Length: 427
Image (tube, rainbow, N blue to C red; front, side, top):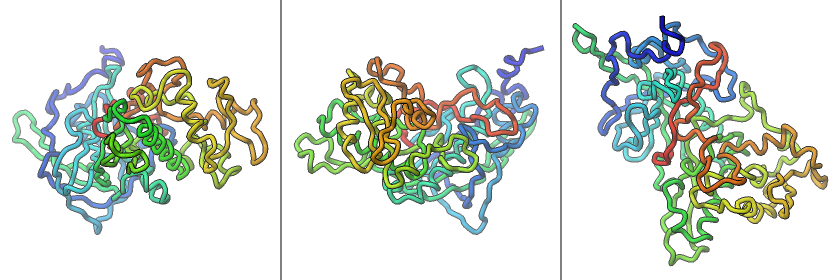
């Protein structure tokens, strides 16, 4: 008898296209005839949403059989709201890539959460629940985008959002002794703006002037603050998920004051809507005490700039990143004021408790302060070399929370897909 671990590793044992994945349908010319779809409640990664049980034998099913036998949760489909879009180019597609990202109609991006092209095996050599992983990515991203549409400021620093959709995809099935059969299955996707830019991860920051690097990084930090103020915690704040738009920022002949550059934050499949009813990690009461001010980037990113310093956007030496944060945001009255001792730069900054009252040092370690410092943008940069530990807390496009989809069957376990971001796709 196989052990539990060996059973985990049994795949494609029943003959359904054993060891194979059908040809990728998401190629140039493929048409998505879709209906408008409302996603069900988000789950996993902090969302305590109850889920239906899995099939008892799901680990023994092949990748294809499981995707044909087990559909994502229903949500709500609107048969009177249809769209037809044709794929015109690819951004990131292929087996084991997670969400398939393509350009449609030359003007939009479709992010397609097809479990058949999610990784079946995780880093531990055990089987991923690809249907739940894809469904989790879709529901969390839709929930985040829908919340962002309620904030003009947040919409300005994210791609325009064109809704969530469902499409029936015909999948060929080749059973021994039978003709090839095509079976339809529901696949979810979202549509968003096609941005003309490049991710921060793809830019050689060292080739830019210092003031230009600083300008782009400052805009990026501000954008993340605006998302949080809109109620969304990105949870994967990283150069690979920041798109830089502009045509003259890399021209050394253009004065810094004349540079026109924008940033847009992307990839919300692991994001959280902070006040969502089933989200367990509620925001601190800080906003109630300072209702007109944004959360301070100084405390939010203190010791957590490693992914940006690793790619040359700021220094990783002698708390230079922390000094940069203070220089750019210390006197900015848009943010809740903080106190920080520049002579002891590794001491965490602290907020004022209320207007005109100092936050005592004992509050520096309470749950509220810890939450404010809880940016998922990388490990502490203290004592790190460039690139060291970069990305330990980053999930990347499609996320990388591997081996965590085997929690309780009926509660929202920390489900996430298993794609490491490389900065190539952004979306």
